[in-house]
Every structure is written in C-alpha cells, then in structure tokens.
Image (cartoon, rainbow, N blue to C red; front, side):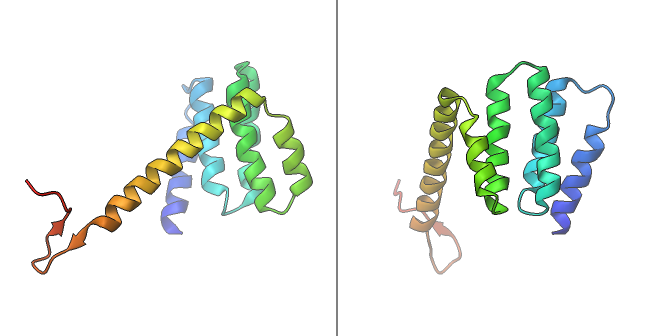
Length: 134
C-alpha cells in the first residue's frame, strides 16, 4: 500500500511540470488512473477523464479508445455495468480489436513466463535447474 502511494505521489509530482507535452500529460494521467483503479475508483475516473480530454485535444481516436477501455474497467469494477456497457459501445471496433489482440498477447506472454517458472525445479544445493542440459 505504501509503495502504491509513493508511486502515485511521484506521478503527481511529474504531472505538475510545466514543460510537459500533451502526450506526456496523457501518459501520466493514464498512469495515475491505473494506479488508482483498484484503490479509489473516483480518482481513477478523474485521471482517465483528464486523459480522454487530452486524447481529444490530440485528435487521437486510438488514445481516446484506450482510455475508454480503462474507464470501462473502472465502471464495471464499481458495479456500474450500464455505464460500462455504454462506454464500451463508444469504442471504435478496429481499435477494440487491436487492444484485444495486444491484451491476449500479453496474457500469453505471462502464461509462458509462468510455465517456465513452474518448470524450474530447485535442487538441494539451492541452484535452479531449468531442465536444459548443455
């Protein structure tokens, strides 16, 4: 919990730099929203809303859709299913498909890492045995 608060404080400090580009502001607001997502949903939505405004300023549909997916997550976690459904339907289908593929790839990557970790066995001297013999 303390580490999360430290990350949030660090991100907030970075966000207050006047020399940030809109893209950097977008990234920091989205990161703050993600940090707050399971912590304080109102704050998460505030930072995701800020990111959405910036994405609109940048005229970037993919960035806006990326944030809408984050908002959908917060809304559904909060039990606001109707609002989550409406937000989800506002997302460009092509972008949604892209994020689904990226998300599935990330999950596959994590499963591969987990499988490798589970395949490793500790031997009595404390060294890791990977099953690879050279």
